[in-house]
Amino acid sequence: MSTIAPERPRRAGVRKPTGLFLPELVFFEPDALNYPKGEKIMAWVKDQGIPYRMTTSHNRITNLPGETELEQYKIAKRTLVVGLRKTLKFEQSKPSADYAIPIATGCMGHCHYCYLQTTLGAKPYIRVYVNTMDIMDAASKYIAERAPEITTFEAACTSDPLGLEHITGSLAELITYMGQQPLGRLRFVTKYQHVDPLLALPHNNHTRVRFSVNADYVIRNFEPATARFEERIEAAGKIARAGYPLGFIIAPIIWHEGWEKGYAELLEKLARALPEDGGRGLTFEMIQHRFTKTAKAVIEKRYPKTKLEMDIEKRKKKWGKYGQNKYVYPDEQQTALREFITERIFEHFPEAGIDYFT
Ligand code: SF4
Image (cartoon, rainbow, N blue to C red; front, side, top):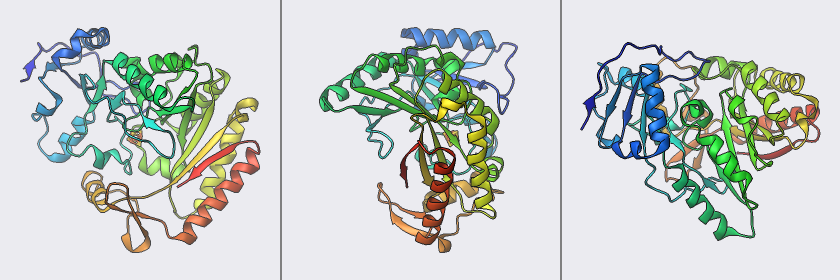
C-alpha cells in the first residue's frame, strides 16, 4: 500500500501549458526502482521536489486527492506512475502501423475529443514503464516473425510519448534501437514540441515523426495543455532538418463553421513554415472526428462546457472494432472534407504522400 514520502519544499510548479510537463504527484511501484530508468526518475523527482509515494501496484491507487470526480480527474492527469510493463503482447495498430509499442499510457493533455477518455476509463493517470529493454526484446520477436517484411511500430497509441521524454528518455532508446533494425520501423505522433533531445540520434531514417495539426478553431477550442500550432511547426522544421522522415496527421477533422477557410489556412501555414526540403518524403494522414455513445457521456461530464459537436442525429453510424458503434460524418460531409483537404495538400505539397483518410 502507499507510503508517503517526507514532504519537501516544491520547486516544481504546475505544468505550464506549453512548457515541460511536471507532475504534481508521483507513485513508484517498488520493482521500478530495480531498473536504472526507475532510479533515474526517482532522482529527478527528488531533485524537482515533487511529492512521491510508493504503491504496490497502480491498480491500488484509489486515494487521489480531490473532492469531486472532476477534480480527481484533473489531478490524475497530473499524476505520474512509474512501473513495469508486464503485458508484452502488442496490440495491432491499423491503419498507421502493424503494432502499438507500449512505452507509456495516459497523457497530460486535455484534448476534449481524445479517445483515451474512454480507453483509460477510471484510470486517467500517466504511467511510464522502466523496462524498456523487455519492450524492445518483444519488438525484436515481432520483427523476426514477419521477416522479410518490414514491421512498423506506433509509439503513440496510448500516450503522447514526446511530452514525457524529458522524464523517461524512452523514445530516444526506441529510436536508437530501431535505427539498428533492418526490418523495423518506428513512428509516433505528437502535439508537443520538445524534440531537441532527439535531433542528434542515429535514427537511420527508421523513425517517422508526425505532428498532429489542425485548423485554428480546433486547436483553440479543443486542445488545452498541448503545444501551440507555431511551436509544433517549429519542432517539425527541426525534425526535418535532422533528417527524420516527417509527417502530419490532420486529426480529428472537424466540420465547423468556416472549416474550408480553417483547413486551407492550415495547409498554407504549414507550407510557409516548413524548410524547403521538408516536403521530401512527407506524408499526411487524415482522421475525421468520431465518437461512441460512451465517449460522448464521458466527455460531457469532464468538459461540460465543450463546444464539441456530438449530435448522433447528424452523424452516420459505423460498426466499431470493439463492438461499439461509432459515429462519423455522413458520406457527403466525409467526401467534402476529404476532397477539399486532399486538394489543398497537393496544391502546397505536390510530392507528399497521403497514407489514408478514415
Ligand atoms: S495530446 Fe494526444 S494523447 Fe494527449 S490528450 Fe491530446 S489527443 Fe490525447
